[in-house]
Image (cartoon, rainbow, N blue to C red; front, side, top):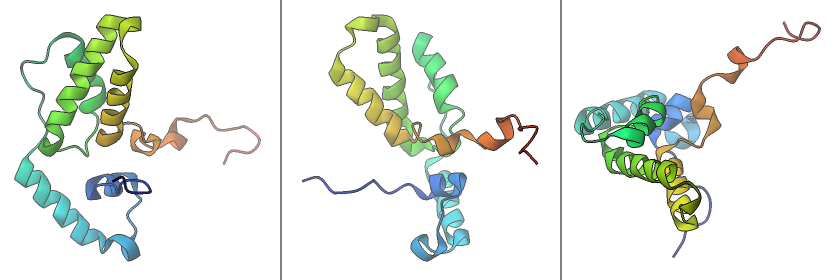
Length: 132
């Protein structure tokens, strides 16, 4: 049976995005220690040598910049890259069911959240009349 509401974010993603709430999630130091323990336990996410072509390009473009991912997400990341490759190769013949899978993997990996893309305010041009 499905549960209501959004899925909880991993502690590492909360720390990266700045949405860690001390009253809800505990102390920030404890969360950082948990993240560090998980990172040392699972290790860093490394691109598999067998990824080639569009799958390797997808890894480089989407997975490498995602610093919050550790090796526990490796299967999801690999499957995302293979689905991406299949979409790039088949184009219009890509079935809708696989679009759903691709979107689910992107969501699971935290790739669809705009807050993970860095500080957008730094990239915007300042208005000459209202920008300070």
